[in-house]
Image (cartoon, rainbow, N blue to C red; front, side, top):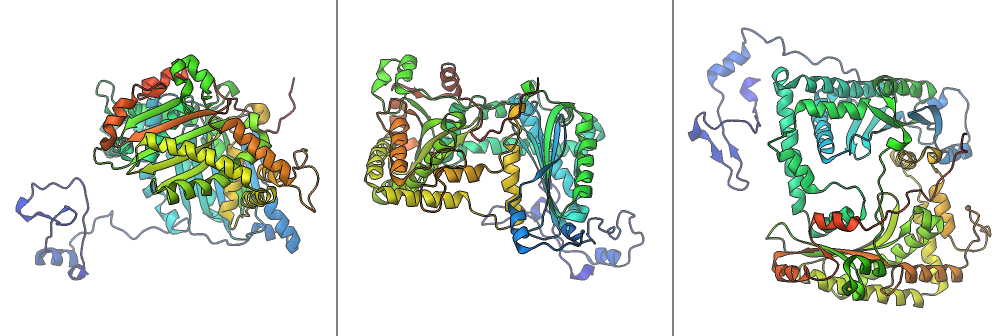
Length: 615
């Protein structure tokens, strides 16, 4: 009833020119607002309208409400035993169909037994990350699309279905989940709109002024978020800076800002449409997964949707065109001498990138020290297992020493780190409001040497027990269907940019990795699943300490280390003084110059399953 309602109007475009004396400012948050009473005349008009607009109507029936909740695994009418049901959980998806640029994977659920399905689609395109401009336009398109889709699939969200579309450097990722009966229709709606939106963007702002407003809003929001990244916490900024140095092809933050702020060559709707079209209809390849309450007939419908909207409109992506991301090989101390000169020979960390916090009010300093150990192909299952164990042991040791005892700061962490292209290492992060980055580096180095002594003093049995704890973590079972979907999907997308001979997913990767780390004990085979001799607790300890001495110890000849520093403005004098130290970089140009000297790590995965060569 109009006499018993309150109407809220929220619009960033509201003008205060209308009755400026009625506008007020909320004292706590500074929000500008206005209150108006509904007049008696207006209530009478609403209560007895002379004419009702045709656009005001009862909502149409929700076409996404499911009516079929039956389980496809019961269609055959055959009962399965509890043992078979448990085994079905461990069975990986199978390749349902394959064409030169598209693989469809499928698994019908028999364990969770819920009437829901998950669909995952990954579209790989070399155009997305071709330049800062193309990546920026792709992100804007994604935002406009998600904003636009709200009106198209609102009913689906009410009916228990959901979707997620994102843009990554390799291309577009589409995720759809919900009740099985209506999911193919939802996917069809989403993908159809992705293409029709491109056509509307091409027609320009004159024909679609509302779409132009959404485009401008998406661009402005992305620009603001990109600029605000500089205001992130210092340890997050340090992590971004180290990634800039350790990964071969990473566009810099300022590259994106320049594209969005450029007046001479501004971003347009038409150009956004061209880039999106190239990413979704040009040269590409794709992987898709259907898992849950869906049989082969339903999977075939999903494949038809994907083929009709993407694959049939595109050309197969040549293996040489597939986007490749590699990691730089940090220099050893000896190699750093050839780059920076003999002055760096005495530096425990030969490469240091530093910057001053963007905000003068930032109170914290931060340091991130990364020690590279190798890559997938050089470490293999055994090396990565040993690195996981060292990371597991190092976290509690560093937290106890640097956080609890020395109280350097609230944020102290150690973790194994994998960068693009399969390079592995150990990263130590400390953020402090009381200590400078140089002092934090010194304490990290001191902890590294002390941790080596802890490893030496640890008994082989104690280390074996810790290794078994890591094994349990690696083999932790999925507790719901969505987790199982993530497990299998991660293995599939890990192959999407590989050479065509090593695109078979290693669905048993974690099992092999865990078994390689599992030390010898009664009941275990003498050899691991990779065919290696299983290590005794004593041999495991020797391998761990040897690995640490080879890659992480301060004086190790093969140590490849870098530090990313962020200084607060209180430490500005020390920041400026440090600029003259050997091996110190402070600009993106410095990084690019250093990369000219550095090779890249091989990208062949440690879990590779090779296909036979066809000649």
